[in-house]
Every structure is written in structure tokens, then in C-alpha cells.
Image (cartoon, one colour):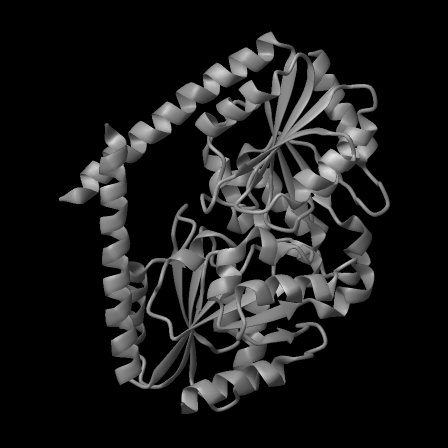
Length: 217
Length: 217
């Protein structure tokens, strides 16, 4: 008896989220702000990649919305580096949604540049919810193993760019690059896959070039 | 208007899950089966730990319920090793729940030994749902970074035992063991934290000893 009700309500919540996401996206576009939704599993290096990208973007104004279940460890790190950052603690919710992003965006009063939104560390649910972004950047890592596209397809399917992080550890793992890329390409023909390392700095020039091209377009 | 309705229905779903979990737990206990709910983020090494534990358990009968969003990569691996395994594909759902485990347990016709239930790779939602287990085993890894207990507290709080995996990579990461343990102990005073490596085999004797003590009790 309650199942059809539940589905109806979930659809209503989902539709409201998508509608709000479209509003946020239009408002950011009008302000000349390019928003990047950064997704990836816990510990894959989302914040470390964020910092590398912001540094490599040089004079481009960058802001961050930092999503976490709890804690403000990453926000404190970003603020100490002088990055305009707002923390969202979901208190348990496993993904960000557009109502909460709408409020955070209002608080930031952005006028131009790039807004990075670091989603909750989760390779499943964040991919299901639009939050007003212009692009989805998926962070994967060689330490996670090469089967992730096969096991968590939606995030790889929806990504506009994929950073393969922790490549400095490649020699110490049994990561199979061909198997990984085959899995990615079965889901997503066009997203660039960029090998990066936050330790060595490898690959961030290429990732930043991609963002700069998008801003220009 | 729909929010109170949603909450009511979610509670109803949650209560039904807990009730079914108690039934499964009672039925497994009556059969002499000890069930371990294995939780952890994507790529943390849940299946690799599973295989190490099963081998180290020797003559103890072991079965596996393998939870994945999609694919049967891990089930094929386990079946090829002769392990009695049933695959659950949630098709998008980010955690296992007790109705789906109830069906899988019925299919397995277990009589004794250990049932490992590998949950969906997710450090958030699986910790919220009982699935009939006797113990929750949390797998973390040094490659994820030492701040995970602070960012994803519920899984660490609820764990009965924590395996800290990929310790063979400790020298190549900036993992801070003291900070990690301080975070764990702020949430959980009693769960043993066992350093393991699926590459070198380190630590699995200790983990298996813990399981054997639990079976005897």
C-alpha cells in the first residue's frame, strides 16, 4: 500500500531538485560563473585535486562549496589557503541536492570565475542529482582498482571529465589501465580521462586547460 | 505538505527493515551461522579481505552474499575459488537492506559456519541499515587518508571490528596513524583496529582469531 506513495513522493522530490538545479545553473551562467560538481569515493583525493586545480587556474577567481557528512577539515584547509569556501554538513545525507546548493550560492555572492562544488564522498548517489553545475568532474584513483567503471557505472557515464588520481602509486598497485579505460569507454565515449597525481603535480595542466576551454566557450 | 508524509513513510520503511533484520538474525543464530556485514568505500579491498579471511578460516564453512550496484565480477572470482556465493545487484540502490538479504539467505540453505555479506561500496548509507548480521566489519585503507573517522563517523561508530587495509602502501602515503586512531577512539572505544595487507597477508591471523572467538561465544 505504501510503495506507490513512496515512489510518487520520491519523484516529486526528484523533480523539485531538477527544477531548482536549472534555476541555479541559469543564475550562475548569467553571472559568468562556471560550476564544477566534483564527485568521487571517500579518500580518492577530491580536496587535494581541488587545491591543485585552483592553484593552476592562477588569476581566475575560484570559490568552493565543500560538502561533508560531518567535520570542516577540508574547509579549514581551503580557508587557510585563502580560498573563498562555504561548508555544507549534511549530517548523514549521502549526496548534495540543489536546494542546499541554492542557499550556499546565494551566500557566496559570486560575480565570475569557477565554483567548485565538492560533493559527499560517495560513488553512487551524487551522480543521480543535478545541483546546478555546468560540468561533472569525477575523481577516481589507481588505488581503488581498475574495476570501478563496471561496478559504479552511473558516475562514469555522467562525467564530463575524469581525473585518474594517485598515479604516483601506479607502480605499487596492480591497476590495469586498459581494463579501466575499456570500462569507461563502454559507458562514456567523450569524457577526457586525465592521469594526475597530487603528489607530483602530473596532469593538472591538462585538466586546467580543459576547464579554461569550457569557460571560454 | 509532502515533507511530513515522506518522513512518516521513510520511518515505516526503516522499521520494517529492522524487524526483518531481527528475524534473519534469529534464524541464522538458530542454524549456527555467524553473519558478518562487511562495509567500506569503493575500492577499499572488501572482496580481497573476504578471500584472505575465508582462506585463513580453513575448515570453517564460509558463504558469501555479494552486494553490487551492477556487475558480478567479485562473485565470479569467489565462485572460481569454490566459495558458495550469491550475487545481489541493487541496480542503483546504495546499500543492502534486510528484505533482499532475507531472500538471499533462504536461497543459500545455510547450516553452520560464517556468512560474509559484502555490502555496497559506500562509507555512508550501509551503516544505517541492519541486515541481520552478528557483527559489522569495517574495511578502511591507508590510501583513503587518515581523516575518514572524522568525515564518516557512523560507520566507524557502529563497527565491531575495523580492518585497516593496504598497509603495504603505508611508506608511500602520508597516512597519520595516530590521527586515525584518535578519530576512531572518539567514536568507538572497543572495536579492535587490525592493520592488514591483502598483498603481504599481514594481520589476517588476528582478524580470523577475532571471528573464531565470536563463533565460540
